[in-house]
Length: 294
Image (cartoon, rainbow, N blue to C red; front, side):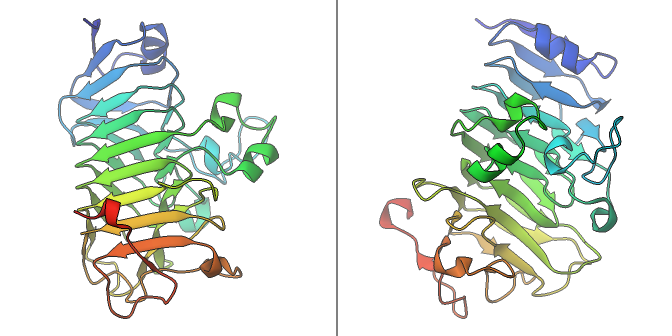
């Protein structure tokens, strides 16, 4: 039987998570935990009392300068970073509330690099780059050696599951190289003054065969998002892989569905699949393989 640990907003989450034994079941009381947290103890089960009222929140952003005058860069802006395996999170919100990404840059709410990660009935909230479903692509792992902490540069493959979650953002707000299942989630675009937005930005290597799978998800938007202004995905790296199966799309989604990423020819290599087929999509979107069909 796992240990039980009850925490309130007055607790230092970083200290408590680090001190917990592997496999501890942590219950978070209602309230706002304005803290930046790195999870590095394996096997933690983290439960909030309410998806919308148990909130871990911070406000770092890419253009922010650290104590040495160096910009944070996308991958230091997380509110919560999961670097341990076998983590489960349920019934809580992880938010980055920096806002104004058009001037501040990327604002990650959750980074996940640990394997066997599961999130159930949670809310992830930010603007640009809300969820980093790691690891990083190989070229960035090499580039950031000595700049980012080692845990955030792990090349280890990561399997992730998101069930009945609300994930909201504006640009590339689900991105990375994980093999990740999004099952019955609401994927919500929030307003961005730049108007055009993108949901997923996959960067999978050619040898990866699973990529991002969106299954029975609802793609929604707030009232200020323009009609036909959002693309389902664009490839962050050449072989980015996404499948969309039996999803419900509102009219903020552009009829073409997908973008090749400006200035590239990734339409020749990206692996984007959709079922059922939608008339008017780009000619390089593929049929979903039979094993992924209902």
